[in-house]
Amino acid sequence: MANVLKDIKFDAEGFMEDAKAWNEEVAKAIAEREGITLSPRHWVVLNYCRKEYETKGEAPTLRNITKNTDVNTKELYELFPAGPGKLAAKVAGLKKPTGCI
Amino acid sequence: MKTFLILGAGTAGTMMAVKMAKKLDPQEWKIIQVDQDPVHYYQPGFLFIPFGVYKPEDVKQPKRRYIPRRVEYIESEVEVIQPAANKVKLAKDGREIAYDYLVIATGSTIRPDETEGLKDGGWGKNIFDFYTYEGTVALSKFLQRWEGGRLVLSVAEMPIKCPVAPLEFLFLADWYFTKKGIRNKVDLTLATPLPGAFTKPVASAVLGDLLSRKGIHVEPDFAISDVDSVNNKVNSYDKRSLGYDLLVSIPVNMGSPLIERSDMGDDLYFVPTDKHTLQSKQWPNVWVVGDAANIPASKAGAVAHFEMEFAIENILAHMQGKEMTGKFDGHANCYIETGFGKAALIDFNYDVEPLTGKYPVPGVGPFTLLGESTINHWGKLAFRFMYWNMLMRDIPMPVSNTMSMAGKKA
Image 1: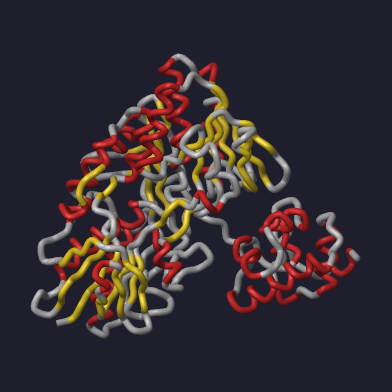
Image 2: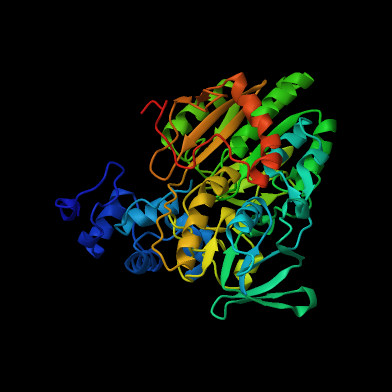
């Protein structure tokens, strides 16, 4: 699996630098590195993140994810335990979500 | 006659009205302003009320007192904005106002109902907010009688109005309980959804250090799932649980329900706005100022003040069909009250995070950046006078609207 990530550039915190280099295999490999085995429910979130990125250019907020998918916040934390906002973006190959000021 | 309509008469809306009353030709323009609440609150003062530094009457003035005479001021709720039709509908008498230009200054509001259990049994008994007048006055009464215990300050979700207020509250609490002689009976905890004390690295490190020196515990990355007010516990999604005797809550902050009703907002009902021009991203004759905008700057009066000049420059250029050249840089600065008669100061913008150093102000400063000093504390307290008498009256302040690197240690 790790080989899939061989040619992919990451920033210091492990977010992909080029979202276009992402595909499903890459997602699986990043998830594995973060200790997550992807289930269909993970993919509901990841596919939504990718769709938002393609239309808006950035990762969606948690509130945005829970509002527009059938995944609620509780489940999000079960799927991506160490902070779903950052982790979902990371596995979806997107930049770290722009924090609040 | 054309109509310039302003919704909201708080900090940003009032500044807009005062300045535009001087700029727009009365032969050509009618200015109308609508707000539902007759009281103008000096919101930075809410922080001081629980600790008896300010009395409730120190932070209230009638809104009308600051509105220029040429402005038609209407006290009414707004039912809906119809930006495609260039009009708004008021609740009062079902009146409709057609506008040529609209300024949205409807602010942000706390929504405790967004967090499960927050408004159950404990609300107003041992759970309080200090972002509303009612909340902070109730909390001050509670604190007068409180004999100590576990105080948890919980921030529900970012962004919040004035992101340093939770820290200031805890610094002041440390001072207040020390002065009362019961600091040894009080545990102070900050439960924050952020990874540390503040949103930006340098300030987060400096302020985090200050919290720990004052014996204030930080529970980082605490995403609140619910409040159990039977057992006095606040729980996080990652299964942490904090017991409290007093819960000071900063609930979810959202834009006005009017923005929600008018379907003009993002997920939190803040209006998508160009961060440099302050023009609505969707409607070219609509501008958004103050907390109502979704720009990535602090929701604070200082930001409303600094952005105002650029918003107005752009509105006037747009009216004349000229290119908009006003470019707000996200400048924010705020005094951070740190207790024991001292305060720190931070100054930053979209691109430069708060740094240490000195902040030069002609005739008054320099003020210490990101370090505690007595003059910063007096700067903070003097600001109430400046707010009512200079800011709301359009008397120039000796502070630049764009950020400067002078004195900062990069």
